[in-house]
Length: 244
Image (tube, rainbow, N blue to C red):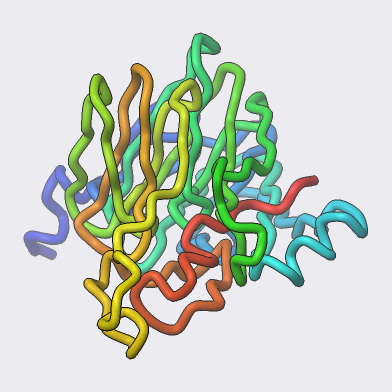
């Protein structure tokens, strides 16, 4: 049988741990455990077990109700090969060496090593009355993370004040200072409902980097955004993984 399907570029990649399988899939050579986005498995070989992760207590359950944070992660364990993807989005691999943490929009997390620690962070300056709060995932330690982007991203070096749309900001150095900036000026136009469509932006300062994707679509997956349109209350755009 002959076909371009059997080209070497489509063959299963070899190696250990979390690897890129082409541009839109990740392969995890399993011999232990890995945390993955719920529902992201597209195929596997071997003896693997899938375990849904709980909300992590009543505190997280309350926060999920208030902020719109959604589906928790799944833990995959066993021996074999696991293939993960999310809506044919581009996959990128990041290695953390313990020198700095990485903050990630929860909707862009695909999988990560269990050697990493993570917690829910909140962007400073986010209004307490926001319908979903500005929450994100902060990873620390040593290990590998697979993230997704909707299109080819740009990595901005932050050495001056930097701003990004909350739904386009994928990940950034945890050492950066973050805040929320309001762009629309209060005037007659805003009072009658007119908007630039860029009502809020995230502001980054310090030394580090920000990964920005070419998409402002409302997120779906690990978080269930409550907003219905572009930057709807900004809520849900930086929703995150539920704590263990």
